Length: 249
Ligand code: HEM
Image (tube, rainbow, N blue to C red; front, side, top):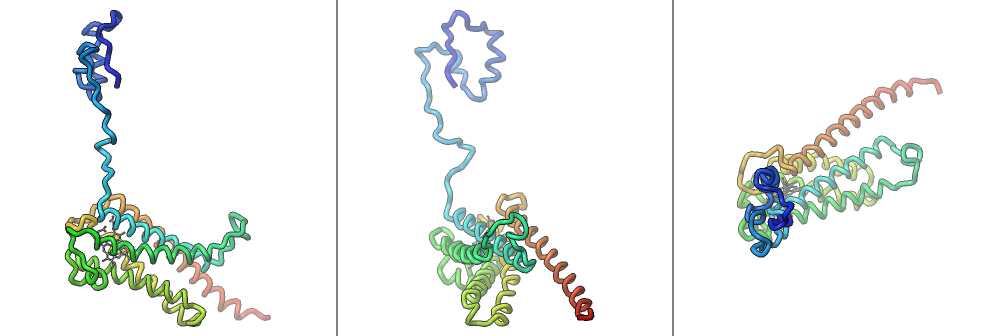
């Protein structure tokens, strides 16, 4: 905010200046307005807006990685459901060739990497006292052991699903599929963990208006809608199939 030149002959008199002061007051201290130009010392502008913190703690980083893992799992489940619906991007919108099976696999590997990285980052926060054993077996972990244990159940479930998918051809379709369904157990555990863990690790009640929690809740809602559509699709299919079987060939 440039200082006002008080030596200017056309400068407004005191009563006229009052509305100007009332506008400038919150941004510019009065000393800039009333002192002579030689007295004016401009203070350096603050480097950043103090009301917008830019420091990211180790705990924040771990939370962001965990939230990205939740996003990757949600994308993975959505793409997997498209396969169940026999969706074809060539026949349907956008009428273009697009290998979404590859994207389904890629999102699975991304989710696994981030889900492993998220607890590993906690080891670098010395004040929280997490040891490697607290991540592998969090039953006695330093804070929120129940929430962390449920997180570990989710992590082991994701590892199981991704590794058995990699070995799909060798396992055979039947065995692979039974392992693949454990993604639902892993998903339930990961949503429970993501919603009920306090990101500050202070055992505070859940802040349902926190951006992270709102993001997780919207992912959960998306998966619930897709699961309901999938259930309806399977129910319709099983109703149509016996009727067709009765048709004369
Ligand atoms: C050994 C397994 C796990 C452990 C020990 C663990 C531990 C923790 C801890 C201590 C927190 C609170 C501090 C922070 O935000 O970093 C947390 C939050 C969180 N974790 Fe995990 N976690 C595990 C697995 C997972 C997995 C597999 C996912 C998702 C794929 C996940 C997603 C999240 C999310 C989304 C949050 C909340 C972030 C927020 O509310 O801002 N975690 N976890």
